[in-house]
Image (cartoon, rainbow over all chains, first blue to last red; front, top):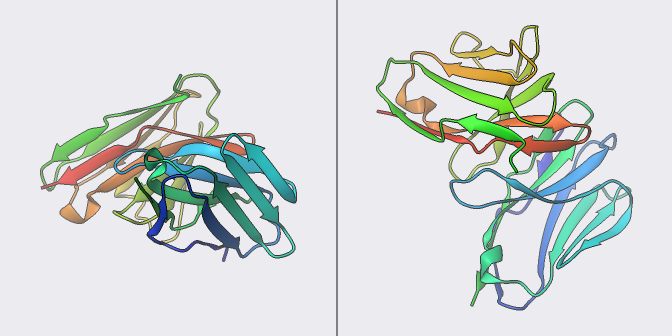
Length: 109
Length: 113
């Protein structure tokens, strides 16, 4: 069974700090990895996706992928209160997505 | 702009009635649509995959007769919750896969009273 795991949190960081969100997955056949942000009562919105090992940066966000360790992370630099949300890690297996349970991030002003 | 338009965003219905949720693909041909359900503070759970012009593929444990999926065109997929009960209250989201990306509908908050 394909599984995606995340710490549920809440993860609390002060404003301006770096928030680090982690995700592990069970199936080595995983092809693509996504980070979504979901505000309460809203649909998820895509932040970043990553296919290859290493780092991928987009503004304040950096995704890191290590396929050997089956690990993907999201770093948020200069965290803002508006970043407070649940962050979902999703893995594309070629036919559908499997989502992790999400990590709730709280950025304290 | 939105790639997938989902309606209604919120619905309250009486127990025993049926509710139809529509998802329209605005920019892409939707040969496939994923339907997810999300309980409070939980992740998205795949219910079924709808396929244009053919029967939907349901995940294990999902009642086919209760959650009717129709995907009759390349722009529209619908989920009908039949004979709704309070335990069906949830957040339902359709998702359009395009390549290896996913575009989400706005979600439907269903409350059965």
